[in-house]
Length: 398
Image (cartoon, rainbow, N blue to C red; front, top):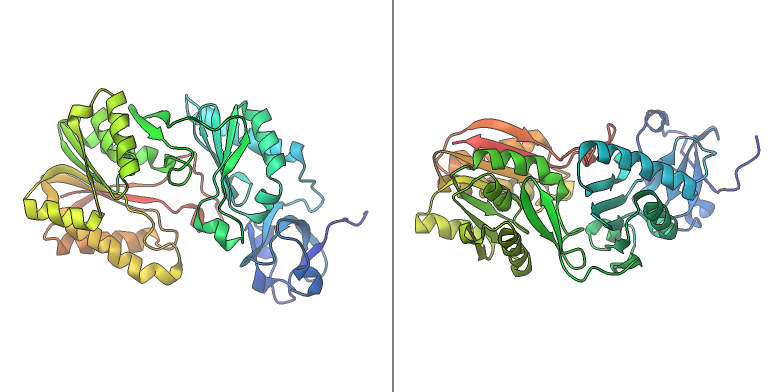
């Protein structure tokens, strides 16, 4: 066999390679020999991962400055990560999404689960927003962009550089247009019978949260004739879906004025602006104010940001989820519905369910858990990576 021209990342003698052989996609810095040659590998460079006996295991992308020092790109150590390789991965992802959805609005690449670790691509019709959240994706951005355009036919590719993950990889926070022209305004996205306005330039994440699509749909089914409260609404996620389901009214609460403006524009495009209202402010303060005002709703949904993005924040995050449930439960009418969501990687389903049930009880209510939801199928879960199944949604009949 011809030796690989790539540098080598070698596991320590006590590091068992079995989990890598079985499909685990990450190599941590404490598992490898970090000598001078390892530290000299440029962030984003490719290398061959070897076990302690120098047997090749996989092609990996390396970042010596990251806790995740290696990300498995291919189980074949001799694979070549060229444009053809990228096209094949994007093509497989596209085939799945086209089978799942009848319009080109979805998450196209969901990082490790689609074989492109640390890379997020959301599609908005003819526009794709790419988040290279790992050093290798930033280093090979031109190749990724060219393959993306060729496979999908999108006319614009926007790089979004926001997010905590890029900082952990030592990457900048500068977004730009990689191909085509920057969108001149928000892009309308049809979903679950509603219309969402996605700001692809300065909005949160890539502009819209596609992951909640099936949970929006479940809330929609509960909302015919209902008064609905959507807290941490962003651009109207649950509120606009509820209107599409026949809600009598929907009130969206969020801290962001620009996000609420987009939600109002979405309601207007649906012809339902008269049934839609917004309140800007801190969500906890608004929940307390609504309780003091004696306002009640038939359906209340709370979809907060990640209160526990890391294990260190777990206890604090669980207290915050409990507080949300405690404040929201009294706002639900007798026989109404409460939806509670968590997108925290560090909070598993059991812990989130426990915090939610405690909060409901401390809010003076009792309820039956009628539905447990997760991210949509365009956010597949990597079977060896629990972190890829981050989204949880619980719906209670109170």
